[in-house]
Image (cartoon, rainbow, N blue to C red; front, side, top):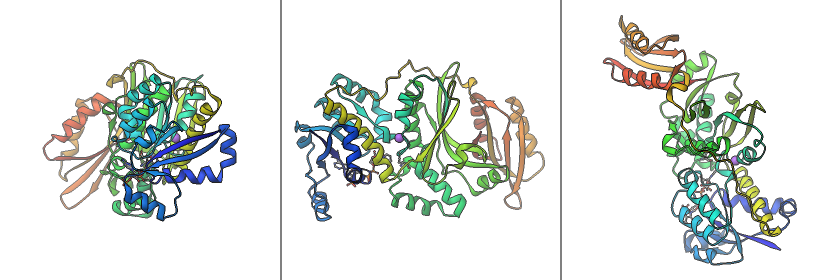
Length: 426
Ligand SMILES: NC(=O)C1=CN([C@@H]2O[C@H](COP(=O)(O)OP(=O)(O)OC[C@H]3O[C@@H](n4cnc5c(N)ncnc54)[C@H](OP(=O)(O)O)[C@@H]3O)[C@@H](O)[C@H]2O)C=CC1
Ligand SMILES: N[C@@H](CC=O)C(=O)O
Ligand code: NA
Protein backbone atom coordinates (compact mmCIF):
# COMPACT_ATOMS: atom_id res chain seq x y z
CA UNK A 1 0.00 0.00 0.00
CA UNK A 2 1.02 3.63 -0.47
CA UNK A 3 -0.29 6.36 1.83
CA UNK A 4 -0.89 9.56 -0.12
CA UNK A 5 -0.32 12.97 1.33
CA UNK A 6 -1.32 16.37 -0.01
CA UNK A 7 0.65 19.47 0.84
CA UNK A 8 -1.10 22.82 1.28
CA UNK A 9 1.54 25.43 0.40
CA UNK A 10 5.03 24.85 -0.96
CA UNK A 11 7.15 27.39 0.93
CA UNK A 12 10.18 27.01 3.21
CA UNK A 13 9.00 24.08 5.34
CA UNK A 14 6.87 22.21 2.80
CA UNK A 15 9.66 22.18 0.23
CA UNK A 16 11.89 20.43 2.81
CA UNK A 17 9.59 17.39 2.97
CA UNK A 18 10.62 15.80 -0.38
CA UNK A 19 14.27 15.88 0.73
CA UNK A 20 13.54 13.73 3.80
CA UNK A 21 11.15 11.37 1.99
CA UNK A 22 13.87 10.77 -0.60
CA UNK A 23 17.04 10.73 1.50
CA UNK A 24 15.53 8.70 4.34
CA UNK A 25 12.89 6.81 2.32
CA UNK A 26 13.76 3.33 3.46
CA UNK A 27 13.70 4.10 7.19
CA UNK A 28 10.51 6.14 6.79
CA UNK A 29 8.68 3.37 4.89
CA UNK A 30 9.78 0.81 7.41
CA UNK A 31 8.67 2.97 10.40
CA UNK A 32 5.34 3.78 8.75
CA UNK A 33 4.80 0.21 7.49
CA UNK A 34 3.95 1.75 4.11
CA UNK A 35 5.36 3.89 1.35
CA UNK A 36 4.43 7.56 1.56
CA UNK A 37 3.86 9.60 -1.56
CA UNK A 38 3.14 13.28 -2.19
CA UNK A 39 0.15 12.97 -4.50
CA UNK A 40 -0.97 16.62 -4.69
CA UNK A 41 0.39 20.06 -3.78
CA UNK A 42 -1.87 23.08 -3.41
CA UNK A 43 -0.26 26.28 -4.66
CA UNK A 44 -1.65 29.78 -4.78
CA UNK A 45 -2.25 30.17 -8.50
CA UNK A 46 -1.33 29.11 -12.03
CA UNK A 47 1.73 31.40 -12.07
CA UNK A 48 3.21 29.70 -8.98
CA UNK A 49 2.44 26.29 -10.50
CA UNK A 50 4.26 27.17 -13.73
CA UNK A 51 7.20 28.66 -11.84
CA UNK A 52 7.60 25.52 -9.69
CA UNK A 53 7.34 23.22 -12.73
CA UNK A 54 9.96 25.34 -14.50
CA UNK A 55 12.25 24.91 -11.45
CA UNK A 56 11.98 21.14 -11.96
CA UNK A 57 9.47 20.29 -9.18
CA UNK A 58 7.62 17.35 -10.61
CA UNK A 59 4.42 17.31 -8.52
CA UNK A 60 0.74 17.30 -9.26
CA UNK A 61 0.21 20.98 -8.45
CA UNK A 62 -3.39 22.09 -7.96
CA UNK A 63 -4.81 25.55 -7.34
CA UNK A 64 -8.19 24.56 -5.89
CA UNK A 65 -8.48 22.83 -2.52
CA UNK A 66 -11.52 20.89 -3.79
CA UNK A 67 -9.18 18.74 -5.88
CA UNK A 68 -7.68 17.48 -2.62
CA UNK A 69 -10.79 17.37 -0.44
CA UNK A 70 -12.74 15.29 -2.94
CA UNK A 71 -9.91 12.89 -3.73
CA UNK A 72 -10.51 9.69 -1.71
CA UNK A 73 -6.94 8.55 -2.37
CA UNK A 74 -5.53 11.42 -0.24
CA UNK A 75 -5.20 10.13 3.33
CA UNK A 76 -3.28 12.93 5.03
CA UNK A 77 -3.41 16.68 4.44
CA UNK A 78 -0.31 18.65 5.47
CA UNK A 79 -1.05 22.33 5.99
CA UNK A 80 2.06 24.52 5.66
CA UNK A 81 0.63 27.81 4.41
CA UNK A 82 0.58 29.57 7.79
CA UNK A 83 -1.77 32.32 9.10
CA UNK A 84 -5.38 31.78 10.20
CA UNK A 85 -7.38 31.86 6.97
CA UNK A 86 -7.76 30.06 4.66
CA UNK A 87 -5.76 27.51 6.70
CA UNK A 88 -8.56 27.15 9.30
CA UNK A 89 -11.22 26.52 6.68
CA UNK A 90 -9.05 24.10 4.69
CA UNK A 91 -8.07 22.10 7.79
CA UNK A 92 -11.69 21.93 8.99
CA UNK A 93 -12.80 20.76 5.55
CA UNK A 94 -10.04 18.15 5.37
CA UNK A 95 -10.97 16.77 8.81
CA UNK A 96 -14.64 16.71 7.82
CA UNK A 97 -13.62 14.79 4.70
CA UNK A 98 -12.10 12.26 7.17
CA UNK A 99 -8.51 13.00 6.28
CA UNK A 100 -5.85 13.21 8.99
CA UNK A 101 -4.12 16.58 9.19
CA UNK A 102 -0.56 17.60 10.06
CA UNK A 103 0.27 21.27 10.56
CA UNK A 104 3.00 23.53 11.95
CA UNK A 105 0.63 26.47 12.32
CA UNK A 106 0.97 27.67 15.92
CA UNK A 107 -1.00 30.85 15.25
CA UNK A 108 -4.02 28.78 14.26
CA UNK A 109 -3.58 26.15 16.98
CA UNK A 110 -3.21 28.76 19.73
CA UNK A 111 -6.33 30.62 18.65
CA UNK A 112 -8.60 27.83 17.36
CA UNK A 113 -6.92 24.56 18.34
CA UNK A 114 -9.74 23.31 20.58
CA UNK A 115 -12.32 23.82 17.84
CA UNK A 116 -10.18 21.97 15.28
CA UNK A 117 -9.47 19.12 17.69
CA UNK A 118 -13.23 18.76 18.29
CA UNK A 119 -13.80 18.51 14.53
CA UNK A 120 -11.05 15.89 14.29
CA UNK A 121 -12.56 13.83 17.12
CA UNK A 122 -16.06 14.07 15.66
CA UNK A 123 -14.74 12.69 12.38
CA UNK A 124 -12.52 10.02 13.94
CA UNK A 125 -9.35 11.43 12.46
CA UNK A 126 -6.33 13.07 14.08
CA UNK A 127 -4.60 16.44 14.01
CA UNK A 128 -0.84 16.36 14.78
CA UNK A 129 1.44 19.38 15.10
CA UNK A 130 4.88 18.59 16.55
CA UNK A 131 6.54 21.30 14.44
CA UNK A 132 4.31 24.04 15.88
CA UNK A 133 6.44 24.38 19.03
CA UNK A 134 10.23 24.65 18.85
CA UNK A 135 10.38 23.53 15.16
CA UNK A 136 12.92 20.71 15.24
CA UNK A 137 12.72 19.69 18.92
CA UNK A 138 10.47 16.68 19.55
CA UNK A 139 8.93 18.32 22.62
CA UNK A 140 5.16 17.90 22.28
CA UNK A 141 5.28 14.16 21.69
CA UNK A 142 7.76 13.83 24.58
CA UNK A 143 5.44 15.72 26.96
CA UNK A 144 2.43 13.70 25.78
CA UNK A 145 4.16 10.34 26.18
CA UNK A 146 7.31 10.30 28.34
CA UNK A 147 5.82 12.64 30.95
CA UNK A 148 2.57 10.75 31.55
CA UNK A 149 3.90 9.41 34.86
CA UNK A 150 5.19 12.77 36.04
CA UNK A 151 3.70 16.04 37.29
CA UNK A 152 5.17 19.15 35.67
CA UNK A 153 5.45 22.24 37.85
CA UNK A 154 7.26 24.66 35.54
CA UNK A 155 8.17 25.06 31.88
CA UNK A 156 10.69 27.67 30.75
CA UNK A 157 11.35 28.08 27.05
CA UNK A 158 13.44 29.97 24.56
CA UNK A 159 10.99 29.14 21.80
CA UNK A 160 11.35 31.80 19.15
CA UNK A 161 14.31 31.13 16.89
CA UNK A 162 14.12 34.46 15.08
CA UNK A 163 14.30 36.69 18.16
CA UNK A 164 16.96 34.50 19.77
CA UNK A 165 19.02 34.58 16.57
CA UNK A 166 18.62 38.37 16.42
CA UNK A 167 19.57 38.94 20.07
CA UNK A 168 22.62 36.70 19.68
CA UNK A 169 23.84 38.54 16.58
CA UNK A 170 23.15 41.97 18.13
CA UNK A 171 24.88 41.16 21.43
CA UNK A 172 27.79 38.99 20.28
CA UNK A 173 28.55 40.52 16.89
CA UNK A 174 27.21 44.07 17.16
CA UNK A 175 24.69 43.66 14.30
CA UNK A 176 21.89 46.21 14.06
CA UNK A 177 18.30 45.15 14.71
CA UNK A 178 17.49 45.54 10.98
CA UNK A 179 20.51 43.51 9.81
CA UNK A 180 19.66 40.70 12.21
CA UNK A 181 16.01 40.62 11.16
CA UNK A 182 16.88 40.61 7.45
CA UNK A 183 19.22 37.64 7.92
CA UNK A 184 16.64 35.70 10.02
CA UNK A 185 14.14 36.20 7.19
CA UNK A 186 16.65 35.18 4.52
CA UNK A 187 17.43 31.97 6.41
CA UNK A 188 13.72 31.07 6.58
CA UNK A 189 13.44 31.42 10.38
CA UNK A 190 11.10 34.42 10.52
CA UNK A 191 7.39 34.31 9.76
CA UNK A 192 6.30 36.01 6.53
CA UNK A 193 5.26 38.88 8.83
CA UNK A 194 8.01 38.88 11.49
CA UNK A 195 6.04 41.11 13.90
CA UNK A 196 4.92 38.01 15.78
CA UNK A 197 8.53 36.86 16.17
CA UNK A 198 9.95 40.09 17.58
CA UNK A 199 6.96 41.07 19.71
CA UNK A 200 6.73 37.83 21.68
CA UNK A 201 3.45 36.83 20.00
CA UNK A 202 4.85 33.71 18.31
CA UNK A 203 6.38 32.57 21.62
CA UNK A 204 3.07 33.29 23.39
CA UNK A 205 1.25 31.07 20.86
CA UNK A 206 3.73 28.33 21.74
CA UNK A 207 3.04 28.82 25.48
CA UNK A 208 -0.68 28.22 24.81
CA UNK A 209 0.15 24.90 23.13
CA UNK A 210 2.75 23.91 25.74
CA UNK A 211 0.24 24.63 28.54
CA UNK A 212 -2.06 21.98 27.05
CA UNK A 213 0.64 19.32 26.80
CA UNK A 214 2.51 20.05 30.05
CA UNK A 215 -0.37 21.03 32.34
CA UNK A 216 -3.50 19.74 30.59
CA UNK A 217 -4.92 23.28 30.74
CA UNK A 218 -5.70 25.64 27.88
CA UNK A 219 -4.53 29.14 28.65
CA UNK A 220 -6.19 31.63 26.33
CA UNK A 221 -3.75 33.53 24.13
CA UNK A 222 -5.06 36.85 25.52
CA UNK A 223 -4.16 35.65 29.03
CA UNK A 224 -0.50 35.08 28.15
CA UNK A 225 1.25 38.31 29.18
CA UNK A 226 3.74 38.96 26.39
CA UNK A 227 6.37 41.46 25.40
CA UNK A 228 9.09 41.24 22.73
CA UNK A 229 12.66 42.34 22.21
CA UNK A 230 12.13 45.80 20.69
CA UNK A 231 12.69 47.76 23.92
CA UNK A 232 15.96 46.13 24.91
CA UNK A 233 18.78 48.68 24.66
CA UNK A 234 22.57 48.27 24.54
CA UNK A 235 22.61 49.78 28.06
CA UNK A 236 20.37 46.96 29.35
CA UNK A 237 22.63 44.38 27.68
CA UNK A 238 25.76 46.02 29.10
CA UNK A 239 24.44 46.06 32.65
CA UNK A 240 23.24 42.47 32.33
CA UNK A 241 26.73 41.43 31.23
CA UNK A 242 28.36 43.35 34.08
CA UNK A 243 26.14 41.55 36.60
CA UNK A 244 26.68 38.07 35.13
CA UNK A 245 23.37 37.81 33.25
CA UNK A 246 22.35 37.38 29.63
CA UNK A 247 19.06 38.78 28.33
CA UNK A 248 16.77 36.37 26.47
CA UNK A 249 13.14 36.30 25.47
CA UNK A 250 11.87 33.57 27.78
CA UNK A 251 8.44 31.98 27.98
CA UNK A 252 7.36 30.62 31.34
CA UNK A 253 4.41 28.52 32.46
CA UNK A 254 4.06 27.72 36.15
CA UNK A 255 1.48 25.93 38.21
CA UNK A 256 1.01 27.39 41.69
CA UNK A 257 -1.44 26.27 44.36
CA UNK A 258 -4.05 28.70 43.03
CA UNK A 259 -3.62 27.73 39.36
CA UNK A 260 -1.60 28.22 36.19
CA UNK A 261 0.12 31.29 34.72
CA UNK A 262 2.01 31.91 31.47
CA UNK A 263 4.03 34.79 30.12
CA UNK A 264 6.71 35.65 27.54
CA UNK A 265 9.00 38.47 28.61
CA UNK A 266 12.61 39.60 28.21
CA UNK A 267 14.48 38.00 31.07
CA UNK A 268 17.83 38.39 32.85
CA UNK A 269 19.17 34.84 33.03
CA UNK A 270 22.24 34.06 35.15
CA UNK A 271 25.07 33.03 32.80
CA UNK A 272 25.16 29.70 34.64
CA UNK A 273 21.50 28.90 33.83
CA UNK A 274 21.18 26.16 31.19
CA UNK A 275 18.93 28.40 29.06
CA UNK A 276 21.61 31.10 28.96
CA UNK A 277 23.67 28.93 26.60
CA UNK A 278 20.89 28.70 24.02
CA UNK A 279 22.09 30.93 21.20
CA UNK A 280 21.30 31.70 17.58
CA UNK A 281 18.31 29.92 16.09
CA UNK A 282 18.51 27.23 18.75
CA UNK A 283 15.54 26.77 21.09
CA UNK A 284 15.25 24.98 24.38
CA UNK A 285 12.41 23.90 26.61
CA UNK A 286 13.37 23.50 30.27
CA UNK A 287 10.96 21.33 32.24
CA UNK A 288 10.72 21.00 36.02
CA UNK A 289 8.68 18.13 37.42
CA UNK A 290 8.25 16.20 40.66
CA UNK A 291 9.62 12.96 39.19
CA UNK A 292 12.29 13.61 36.56
CA UNK A 293 13.30 16.88 38.23
CA UNK A 294 15.00 19.23 35.77
CA UNK A 295 15.33 18.34 32.07
CA UNK A 296 16.13 20.48 29.08
CA UNK A 297 15.23 19.75 25.45
CA UNK A 298 17.49 21.63 23.05
CA UNK A 299 17.57 21.96 19.27
CA UNK A 300 16.83 24.13 16.25
CA UNK A 301 13.61 26.10 16.66
CA UNK A 302 13.21 27.02 13.01
CA UNK A 303 14.61 26.34 9.57
CA UNK A 304 13.55 24.20 6.66
CA UNK A 305 15.01 20.77 7.43
CA UNK A 306 14.54 20.71 11.23
CA UNK A 307 10.91 21.77 10.90
CA UNK A 308 10.23 19.41 8.01
CA UNK A 309 11.72 16.57 10.09
CA UNK A 310 9.09 17.17 12.80
CA UNK A 311 6.32 17.38 10.20
CA UNK A 312 7.41 14.11 8.57
CA UNK A 313 7.56 12.39 11.99
CA UNK A 314 3.86 13.27 12.44
CA UNK A 315 3.09 12.06 8.92
CA UNK A 316 4.76 8.72 9.67
CA UNK A 317 2.62 8.15 12.79
CA UNK A 318 -0.57 8.88 10.87
CA UNK A 319 0.51 6.90 7.80
CA UNK A 320 1.09 3.87 10.00
CA UNK A 321 -2.46 4.09 11.38
CA UNK A 322 -3.82 4.26 7.83
CA UNK A 323 -1.68 1.38 6.62
CA UNK A 324 -2.39 -0.82 9.62
CA UNK A 325 -6.09 0.13 9.74
CA UNK A 326 -6.42 1.47 13.28
CA UNK A 327 -7.67 4.88 14.48
CA UNK A 328 -4.80 7.25 15.11
CA UNK A 329 -4.75 8.30 18.78
CA UNK A 330 -5.21 12.00 19.59
CA UNK A 331 -1.91 13.88 19.77
CA UNK A 332 -2.53 14.90 23.40
CA UNK A 333 -4.95 13.37 25.89
CA UNK A 334 -4.06 15.39 29.01
CA UNK A 335 -6.98 17.70 29.82
CA UNK A 336 -8.14 19.37 33.04
CA UNK A 337 -10.25 22.39 33.89
CA UNK A 338 -8.20 25.56 33.31
CA UNK A 339 -7.72 27.50 36.54
CA UNK A 340 -5.60 30.65 36.57
CA UNK A 341 -3.13 31.46 39.34
CA UNK A 342 -3.74 34.42 41.62
CA UNK A 343 -1.35 37.32 41.01
CA UNK A 344 -0.20 37.24 44.65
CA UNK A 345 1.10 33.69 44.08
CA UNK A 346 3.47 34.83 41.32
CA UNK A 347 6.75 36.05 42.79
CA UNK A 348 9.72 37.33 40.80
CA UNK A 349 12.58 39.80 40.91
CA UNK A 350 12.67 42.59 38.33
CA UNK A 351 15.09 45.01 36.73
CA UNK A 352 13.76 48.55 36.24
CA UNK A 353 15.58 51.05 33.99
CA UNK A 354 14.37 54.56 34.79
CA UNK A 355 15.53 57.84 33.26
CA UNK A 356 15.45 61.00 35.32
CA UNK A 357 17.08 64.36 35.89
CA UNK A 358 20.47 63.95 37.58
CA UNK A 359 19.75 65.94 40.77
CA UNK A 360 19.50 65.28 44.46
CA UNK A 361 16.44 63.53 45.88
CA UNK A 362 15.45 61.56 42.77
CA UNK A 363 16.58 58.19 44.10
CA UNK A 364 14.82 58.97 47.37
CA UNK A 365 11.53 59.52 45.49
CA UNK A 366 11.93 56.10 43.86
CA UNK A 367 12.85 54.52 47.18
CA UNK A 368 9.69 55.97 48.74
CA UNK A 369 7.61 54.63 45.90
CA UNK A 370 9.06 51.11 46.21
CA UNK A 371 8.73 51.29 50.00
CA UNK A 372 5.03 52.17 49.66
CA UNK A 373 4.61 48.91 47.75
CA UNK A 374 6.66 47.07 50.37
CA UNK A 375 9.30 46.11 47.78
CA UNK A 376 12.99 46.48 48.57
CA UNK A 377 15.97 47.12 46.33
CA UNK A 378 18.54 44.38 45.88
CA UNK A 379 20.96 46.43 43.76
CA UNK A 380 20.93 50.00 42.44
CA UNK A 381 23.12 51.50 39.70
CA UNK A 382 23.28 54.93 38.18
CA UNK A 383 24.66 55.78 34.75
CA UNK A 384 25.13 59.25 33.30
CA UNK A 385 23.37 59.73 29.94
CA UNK A 386 24.11 63.45 29.48
CA UNK A 387 25.05 66.38 31.70
CA UNK A 388 21.64 66.47 33.35
CA UNK A 389 20.10 63.08 32.71
CA UNK A 390 20.83 59.73 34.34
CA UNK A 391 19.52 56.19 34.13
CA UNK A 392 18.80 54.58 37.45
CA UNK A 393 18.81 50.79 37.16
CA UNK A 394 17.20 48.93 40.03
CA UNK A 395 17.18 45.22 40.62
CA UNK A 396 14.50 44.49 43.16
CA UNK A 397 13.96 41.74 45.65
CA UNK A 398 11.02 39.43 44.95
CA UNK A 399 7.59 40.96 44.54
CA UNK A 400 4.27 39.56 43.43
CA UNK A 401 2.60 40.45 40.16
CA UNK A 402 0.21 42.93 41.83
CA UNK A 403 3.14 44.79 43.33
CA UNK A 404 4.95 44.75 39.97
CA UNK A 405 1.92 46.12 38.10
CA UNK A 406 1.40 48.81 40.76
CA UNK A 407 5.05 49.87 40.58
CA UNK A 408 4.99 50.05 36.78
CA UNK A 409 1.85 52.21 36.89
CA UNK A 410 3.22 54.48 39.63
CA UNK A 411 6.68 54.99 38.06
CA UNK A 412 5.09 55.62 34.65
CA UNK A 413 2.97 58.42 36.08
CA UNK A 414 5.71 59.89 38.28
CA UNK A 415 6.54 63.41 37.14
CA UNK A 416 10.14 63.77 35.95
CA UNK A 417 10.74 60.01 35.56
CA UNK A 418 10.57 57.83 32.44
CA UNK A 419 10.28 54.08 32.88
CA UNK A 420 12.45 52.93 29.98
CA UNK A 421 12.28 49.20 30.53
CA UNK A 422 11.42 46.39 32.93
CA UNK A 423 12.99 42.94 32.65
CA UNK A 424 12.27 39.88 34.75
CA UNK A 425 15.24 38.47 36.67
CA UNK A 426 15.60 34.74 37.15
N1 LIG B 1 9.96 28.44 8.75
C1 LIG B 1 10.14 27.82 9.92
O1 LIG B 1 11.27 27.63 10.37
C2 LIG B 1 8.97 27.35 10.70
C3 LIG B 1 7.69 27.53 10.26
N2 LIG B 1 6.63 27.05 11.00
C4 LIG B 1 5.28 27.21 10.50
O2 LIG B 1 5.15 26.47 9.30
C5 LIG B 1 4.20 27.07 8.43
C6 LIG B 1 4.86 27.35 7.09
O3 LIG B 1 5.94 28.22 7.30
P1 LIG B 1 6.98 28.57 6.13
O4 LIG B 1 7.20 27.40 5.27
O5 LIG B 1 8.14 29.19 6.82
O6 LIG B 1 6.18 29.71 5.37
P2 LIG B 1 6.38 30.21 3.86
O7 LIG B 1 5.80 31.59 3.82
O8 LIG B 1 7.78 30.01 3.43
O9 LIG B 1 5.47 29.20 3.04
C7 LIG B 1 4.07 29.26 3.00
C8 LIG B 1 3.68 28.99 1.57
O10 LIG B 1 2.27 28.83 1.51
C9 LIG B 1 1.81 29.59 0.42
N3 LIG B 1 0.40 29.94 0.60
C10 LIG B 1 -0.13 30.85 1.45
N4 LIG B 1 -1.45 30.89 1.31
C11 LIG B 1 -1.78 30.00 0.34
C12 LIG B 1 -3.00 29.61 -0.27
N5 LIG B 1 -4.14 30.15 0.09
N6 LIG B 1 -2.95 28.66 -1.23
C13 LIG B 1 -1.78 28.11 -1.60
N7 LIG B 1 -0.58 28.46 -1.07
C14 LIG B 1 -0.59 29.39 -0.12
C15 LIG B 1 2.70 30.80 0.40
O11 LIG B 1 2.61 31.47 -0.84
P3 LIG B 1 2.97 33.05 -0.93
O12 LIG B 1 4.44 33.12 -0.75
O13 LIG B 1 2.46 33.41 -2.25
O14 LIG B 1 2.24 33.72 0.20
C16 LIG B 1 4.04 30.16 0.65
O15 LIG B 1 4.61 29.66 -0.52
C17 LIG B 1 3.73 28.33 9.18
O16 LIG B 1 2.56 28.03 9.89
C18 LIG B 1 4.87 28.62 10.13
O17 LIG B 1 4.45 29.33 11.27
C19 LIG B 1 6.81 26.38 12.17
C20 LIG B 1 8.06 26.16 12.65
C21 LIG B 1 9.24 26.66 11.97
N1 LIG C 1 9.34 32.05 13.24
C1 LIG C 1 9.45 31.00 14.16
C2 LIG C 1 9.49 29.69 13.43
C3 LIG C 1 9.18 28.57 14.30
O1 LIG C 1 8.17 28.48 14.94
C4 LIG C 1 10.73 31.16 14.98
O2 LIG C 1 11.52 32.02 14.63
O3 LIG C 1 10.89 30.45 15.98
NA1 NA D 1 8.60 20.48 18.13
